[in-house]
Amino acid sequence: MNGSVLNRRGLIEGVSALTALWATASSSSAQVLDKSSVFRSAKGPVASLPPRPELIVRGAHVLTMDATVGDLASGDVHVRDGIIVAVGPKLQASGAEVIDGQGMICMPGFVDTHWHLWTSIFRPFVRSDVAEVSFFPVTARLGALMNPEDNYRSVQLGLSQALTAGVTTVQNWAHNVRSPEHADAEMSAMRDTGIRGRFAYGTPVGAPDEQPMDLADVARVKRDWMPNDGMLTLGISSRNLGAISNAGAGSGRGFLTIEQIKKDWDGARALGLPITMHTSGASPIKPLDEAGLLGPNVQLVHPLLTTSEEREILKARGVSYSIAPASEVRRPAALGEVQLGELLESGVKVSLSTDHTTANVCDPFGSMRFLFAVHEHRIGAKVPLTMKRLVQLATLDGAVDLGLADRIGSLTVGKRADLILIRTTDPNMSPPGDPYEALVSMGQSSNVDTVIVDGRILLRRSKFTALDPSRVVTQARESAEALRSKANWPA
Image (cartoon, rainbow, N blue to C red):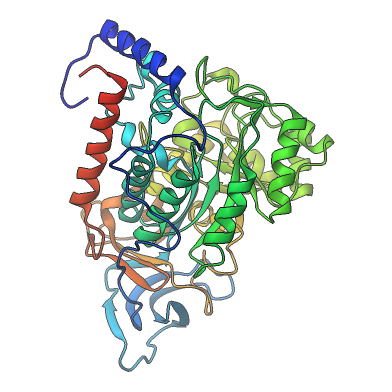
């Protein structure tokens, strides 16, 4: 916390004072906007992004994640107008900008399917080892004090980390949309960063359980923001069925009856939108299925307590599950274990996610590595898991989960050019061996050299081409300090 040493009493007193403020904070669209807020909308202002040049990556170790194409120990990827037009050895591309892929792995960008980006600026306040100021109490209380510009800055801070880690697509799990302006701010941050993603519109933390989702504003977002150039899509993030048993009192997340969930989900489906929901406590799968609510447009998050019968239901209904291993292994033992092996064995669609970056870090390499270690410890050879399967989990399977596999997730001719280059000449990766082993066992975000999203080069030689990271960090710090002042948080 800015280098200050806080004692437990000071933290608790600060939380008590914040609780009083939280009780009076608005959690509806009637919230008065802070005068410093910048108006952002689908119409602008819009940040300047790099153009989409015709380019060719030459001589890289190409991992296509396309079973019909396979991998190339030395291959080229030709991109024009944001589309992959050819993949193969020694391609002809007269006039195209050449990116030297020697000593690099070229692969699809990582797809992160569940990330609470709005919480990114809470790092100065969260302490994983102090219950009173752990993730849930801090986000619930400070979340009620955020103005739209805070949301914009927090989302952009998170997305700047995403790009440096090789993430090209993210589902923004936005369960603190306090007003239409907050929704527009988060969508604007995604657009201005140049990343691809889904905005999963959610209810504000602290909202009464009986308050339904603002489906009128969800419809407005769809009308104003969709269709666009295909970079952004829309869904809803649902509150849980039953309590989030590990969140504790005052988590602000809410828990609904089947009847209440049905109202929100029916509204989303009437708009043609997909649905995502946490399953952090007792499994809701059978009640949801008995109510006829499960289907291929539903993604669940945190697979910890599913039974074999429930997994058969998920497979039959086409439901997917997002795994956030760094968060899930911190849950109490009573909440179960990360069930990757069981889901794969049952044929359930699975993907990989960060969850949040207040006490976690966006690191797809570390997530794959960690997930492999947990799987080996729990199940091992009973359900074979290869390094290549883990890379697929972090790329193509994420695209499948978000309904984008026809556009991204593999280096396939005709798909959009979302790809990354990873140096194998760095000390931790050299001398290179099997590329999948290198990615999972040794890879780090610092090895990400180039990030291309929809044909735009957003990161080159590990440096941003358009985004100003110093500005992003400065503005995030300003918002965090403003929230500290509003909340009378311990200095």
